[in-house]
Length: 221
Image 1 (tube, rainbow, N blue to C red):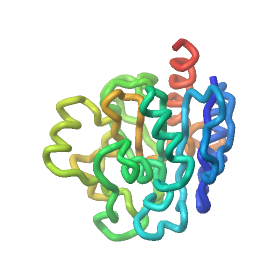
Image 2: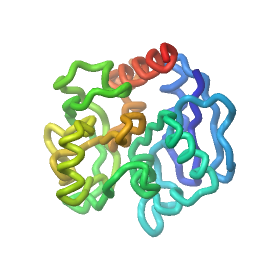
Image 3: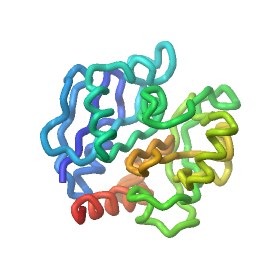
């Protein structure tokens, strides 16, 4: 199975995400933002954390208009899997692949610490965990406050598309939302960093199960 990690100027978790994919058994290609096509045979696209284009305008806004994004959208439209982490989640909302927006943290301060999450909606990304179980993953963001209008939030709830919720909301996100799924459940955006909790050297391997189950599911498919 093959994954592609998109790299923008300012990405700083691209190698971390690639390592997590490789450790789970996936072949990984790094794809520059100015490319216009994904490598042949890609099953999964990863959009990493960081500060793409220095977070100018809005976080993810410039990256969402990069040449490679057309290919990422086409991949998602034909049912391909996409994982956006932190800045990657911001990019996914800016492209319209996921609804809502990521606003400044409620306290207007950058937050970098490990937080508790509750695993919610079933998907290929979450089924490595027991539904309702609690895990711990790091966050590192200034604009992680998930916002959507009431109708959108109600739709996410009704369609069981909230993948993760904060157990102690650190940033003011609506309804404690830490990660959401697309309508076909093949695109996940999440603010916490599973790739930073995927090896023994990290002191926490709660993120490893996400990557392991994802690789197993892609291989089975």
